[in-house]
Image (cartoon, rainbow, N blue to C red; front, side, top):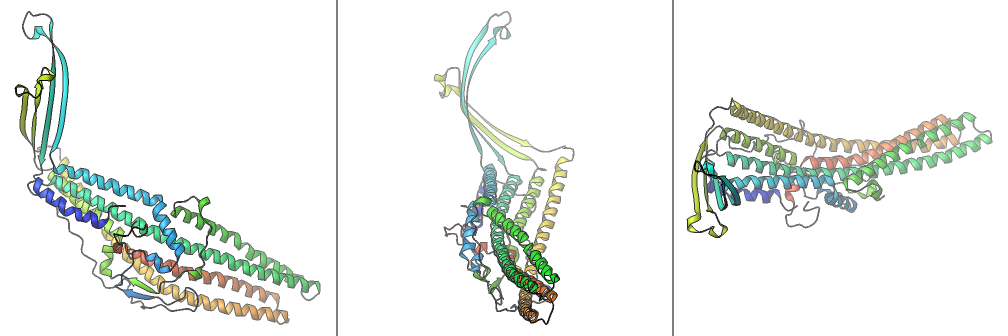
Length: 501
């Protein structure tokens, strides 16, 4: 993509100068002003701790919120995973979603350029050859026959509508705002796609870890079943113990297909994000332990959020376009003045064209003023004002939702850390309990139902622990996405796909 938000904005002063030079009069309608920043100094109702609790496991590091810190443009590199970075580069390059957003931006930019052409006079060239027969009786009574002749013509026509009340300028302004809207839509597409790739990669790693953990548990249960069956053959246990062991083994084994189905669906979704067919997706799985949990988490100030979130900036651009359309509808209530001229040559023979005797020209001025349109023009202005009110309400709703997204993510970071700490403690206790119960069972101190309960608790504790690990990575990505992702810090000179999407 060759056009950036900053580059687009740099062209607007030149257009303003062109508008001033080439048009006269004033622009009716409201002059757009950027809505004021939300006046708040926090995202959540209560003050959250600046640092989360820590757990001595992978993904259990304490996270510190750095208020006002800079969010890197390639924020996903905070995870320290080459695979995640490679996948995001591939997604930016091959995703049809990105291609569609880029095409929409190009369309809006060309519409803006087309609208800007209204600032300048229109010049058209015309050439014609006419062969005509005239009935001579229409020329002189009593004449008979006809008269054949040729007419050759060439001319240049010029017309220019003076922008007396700024209708043209407001129309161009609306198109510029639409181009800005598509620009921020594209930035939002990059941000959402990067977050989706990170989240799907973490989910893939989590599901693979759950499959591996369940398979390990199944192996242990198979060994336990063999021991139980041997004890039954020797008369040491009842048949009910053997049947209970088989039931427990098959119950846990039955969870594997569902996990594998979720894993396959996640990988298929990843293929879509990367612009690939599911059959083309490489079966490369990232170990959760290989992902670095960002420990210093940048947190933008609340006053900065509206300038950083692409969806808020897109909503602002739509509000700007609606404001400009009010000006267009207002200008249509007033007269318009058009100046036109033509210069050329007209002759009966092509050889006589452009000779002084064949010269023709004209100059004209036309004034058109609306008098009676059945209330149409004023109704259209009221409709434009209503559209502006709608855009303003949508902008306000977008801002509210953005702050809610950040607040949700901040709560998630704190709660995820607490949950992982508890899940790890529960897993440790379940492992110790299972070991003690199995020893007691072999010593004949407890029944086999106690073993089954301990095994079930251990299996559930293991799955819960893995999910808690994955949540810390995913919700950190959700916070960075909610803050806008750092696209405004992108180096314009970078040539990599990720740095210059």
